[in-house]
Length: 640
Image (cartoon, rainbow, N blue to C red; front, top):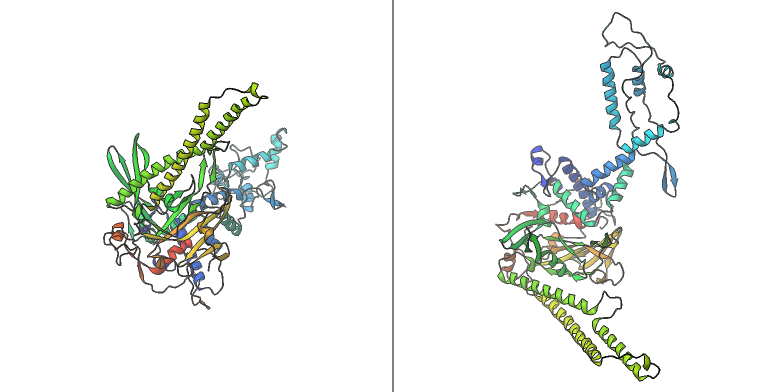
């Protein structure tokens, strides 16, 4: 789609733009133009990555800016730069920090001096004076961007003058006399008396505010600052910005009933979930569109299935003051499944945000049968049974915490605590046998010692039982859907963040299905991963690198959807880099099967050979367009 963008681009006529709606909101013409510029810049990069004879290529700064900064953030940055552009000028640097000086007096132009001289002529009509003053006021106000700057300037003018008396009126008159030849305005109606140049009286209204000097904008520096600011964006914000701009730039293939644009991006990356709410009044449902599944690891380490379960499992919700049950099922799976790991959490005690570094156990292949919306009672029965086991598991884990006493400072579990108390009482009892301590001995009930020993054994046995029950329950949950393997998705890319909630560094792992290898893309360095433990296993250290964003692709479509290293080197480019050409490619069905279709397909993960006639999103796409759409989000800018 990117390399063949001209055939997909949005028309800019008013009729087409009037119906343009992406992300449940109207899109302006300016946003469409900006997005089309983004895709053209991206097309140039893709073309260079495919055809360049050099070992690496670098994206343009403009592409980086459009990728990292959304149109909304761009407007905010522009307002900020406009305000900061009128700040006092720099006087140099000390240790790399700018030294700022005071704002000097406003510079007058020859035109403004001419206006001042012309106002000194007495035959100017009152209407002309009002018009000049009004225009001057408007021009001055147009240059003011900060009340703080205006206050600062007025304060500086009053320095060292607040205790001085006003000058005599005659001095003001003498100072205001123009040293120029009188000019007669030909537009003034003739009168019987000749115009007389006399003293100018005090004005009956305050003079206009003089305009501020226009700041000299360094566009190259502004571009670099915007790119640096955009680099601080979260990976999910950047991906969402890329998807949004891609949709804004292309024309819709259809319009949904709610006015939302349907296009190739939605076909590739967007799925649908139906939420079911069961209350006393019955069962109601609602279908929602999503571009990623949001999971978290806030309460502890877990595997990818347990993390995804949290997005679809049953939970208690309040509906009109009534407690109801809600769970979700996937009604449409996208070919490219994006999973966002929400690691930034909020500590309600400290009132601060923090990054959760709990380990998320990834799997090379996941099967999504268990989450599908289906009419099969057996599957729903298994889900409900699994939810009951999870409720039991939470009770068992809570009891284990009580027995282990993890939150206590003494570090003793319950069996050890009872045993320690028994030993203390036995030592006190033994004091009676020592003549030196017999007088200080106290009477100890032997029954108490016996009961403490029994309690130690009971809690020890209970702890072992709870531990075994937890393991057995976890095994049942893990194997509940072992025979449901019709919808396989393969892990393709892992975005990793290393740092804290305030700062850090991103890099990415991408799997090459053709060569069967993982590569690590870390800025300009691209290396092959020889030990996959760095991707799949816990690092076992404080503040380890953690997955932030995962990409899974439909197993049967992966070879048609992704190609991390796509090269067709052209030693002497025959076309301009900004306008690459494409070759004819085969069509690819972008509509994954419904769960019923996958189930009746003989237990394979394959897709139907023809699009589903009942599916509203079953349309053919060019293969190259599909691969490029993937690269929009997942190709590293320096990977070639």
